[in-house]
Amino acid sequence: MFFKKIHKRIKITLLIIFFIFIVIILRVFYIQVIDYKKLNKKASDLWSRNLPIKADRGLIYDRNGVVLADNATTTSLVVIPNQIKNKKETATKLAEILNVSYETMYKHVSKKTSIERVHPEGRRLSYEVADKIKALKLDGVYLVKESQRVYPYDSYMAHTLGFVGIDNQGLSGIELTYDKYLTGEDGAIKYFSDAKGNKLNLSEVYEQPQDGMNITLTINNEIQTSLERELSNAVTKYNPDRAIGLVMDPNNGEVLAISARPNFSPENYQNYSIEEINRNLPIWATYEPGSTFKIITLAAALQEGKVDLNKDTYYDKGSIKVENATIHCWKHGGHGKETFMQVVENSCNPGFVILGQRLGKNTLFDYIDKFGFGQKTGIDLNGESTGIIFDRSKVGPVELATTAFGQGVSVTPIQQVTAVSAAINGGTLYKPYIVKSINEPETNTVIKETKPTKVRQVISEETSKKVREALENVVANGSGRTSYIDGYRVGGKTGTAQKVENGRYLSNNYILSFIGFLPADDPQVVVYIAIDNPKGTVQYGGTTVGPISKAVLKDCIKALDIPQREGGKNKKYKWPDPKTYTVPDVTNKTVEEAKKTLKNFKVSVDGSGSKVTYQSPAAGTKLDEGKTIRIFTE
Image (cartoon, rainbow, N blue to C red; front, side):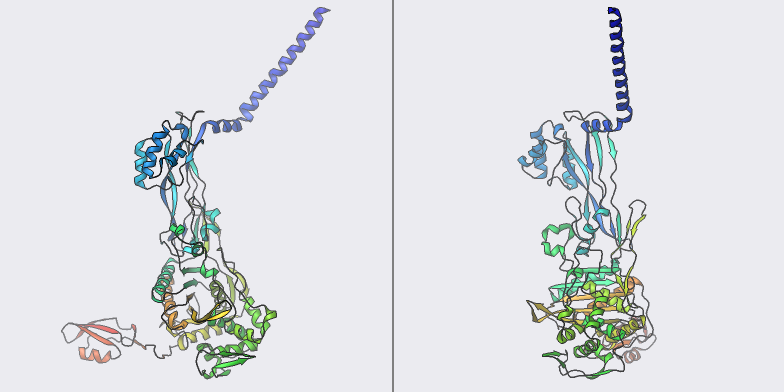
């Protein structure tokens, strides 16, 4: 009986032992097979360390592949405190090379951390400093690759491109708006060390960084360069408070150039105030547009059939009475009897008051809404303003009258260019945009592409054609004559808006502007220039801003390869405009015959012969009266 009990206990014990053995085997199997990756990673984390390798930020290109935002490879300093055997010596030598205090460097090399990035003293080192550190061959001291953002054209479109911080994070402009695409994934060099931090003799693992996505803009760098040059020239010549420029393709909303003054250097943004670096004036600044807004009133009146420009007439006495307010024309004494086409050409305020009255409050303000004023355009840039339009419930006869010629309302440059584009492109309002595509860096595969977005049809093609014709007349016969380009059909409108401060209009302080386009019969480009309070010049948009716009338009002709057009309107010359003549061919003529033929020009003779063998400029060139032509003799 006793032996039976012992035998039973042995069986139970053996069964328990067998069960435990099975559990152990299953557990080992689970650890070695099923849970291997997880446990191996945890173990690896205990004895592996990473030296970071920063990924390059995605590049930003213009539409033709010109790099606008690039990267430069620099070197940064990191230390592994556990590997530094002589911390005092290491701190002393590094402090001397980096020109910082011993105390500062000692804090870095003795910090209780696996890896310490020496910041900011050791960031983005020069090649000379990096070579000195490398030559020391100090234990626990490493130099790692880092990328630094650079802008090849420095301050060009600085507010639009934006800038990045010390860690290459986007802080403004496109750099901020598209930061998630531009930012890459950092890599590392993985090495192995024991519990004390001593480096083990095991192979290092290289984890390649993944660069950020590249971005292609709608910007045309050739036009951008022209715009930047002309704004800089305007600042030098007129010392304005601000200068703004914007160029757009009216047929799809693509921004071809954008800039403003004052501007800044994105690589040195720390040297500027927050206001200077964060206010992108072409989309942020709001002000009374003045006469460029008359294009909207004109388009609305034509669409509603309220005026026949060539048949309807108006007698301008120099002012018009609206309730208790007297609204003056810029020309003292007025223009007398004029057709409404001449009202547009002469930018006659009282004439536009009549158009506003014919439209009525609700109709005019309906069109103002349809053209996109009082709301953001939705351009893919941060910091856009909405502008200010009268509350209809507060619009009386005077407010209706002033709105009709661009006073009392507040708009942004991007709103103006977008709206005028709709008025001349056949009547379609487009959403403006500046990012054309986002591309994968290695294969250039398009990840995301922006297509033109039609917002609404505002006016008809027939009405748009009439608007284009009227604005071409403005350049040929009216206030926009300084933007006339011989051989090319140019349309446009000047603006002279008195500035407001604390609810009062300032005296002798204006925002002068011009918005022009070409070809007038088939617009391919719209240029807008605004100069805020220019000094030492006549306060008229046509006089000051017209020539600036003309220079940019001429560069657009070259950049976009726009051919000359037949059927344009001949310029009506008025003092002080110079007359333009076609240079005749005087080769093979005698010097005396050549001088008589070139009677409209000054003549400079090179050589002592009697017959002309060469002339400059060549025959057929358009030249202002009184310009010099050189003739060369045998």
